[in-house]
Length: 138
Image 1: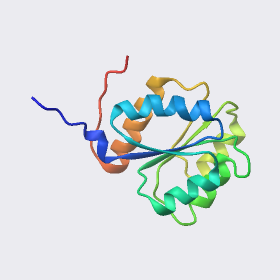
Image 2: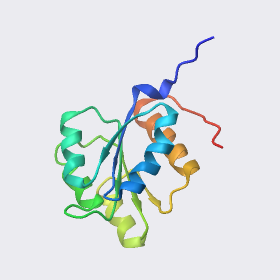
Image 3: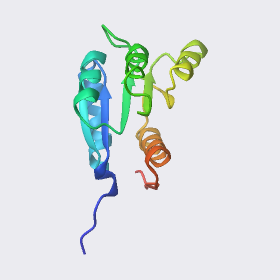
């Protein structure tokens, strides 16, 4: 019996200037069957969104040149519908307010939990594109 991974039709963009953080996100996301795109900064992330199909994006808030929040704000100028999750080690009420104004889907605090990432991706993709991926996360 052959099983298919329904998540494989979705692509996830991760933008983080820290290579180790990108690698951790890849280790969490790829085994779920998602196609993953990696960007080392906000400018690269915007270029990927312009050139490729991306279903959800995860932006680190603290990146050089363009912060995750700035990247989100620029993204909204040409792509109003793409779900974006912000990830930060410094969540505070000011950031949460700005993220809400910029239409971020949610803000996840660092250090990230595999369970939180998997659950959040499943929830956002289910809401944005229909269906649900109920997973058992070890």
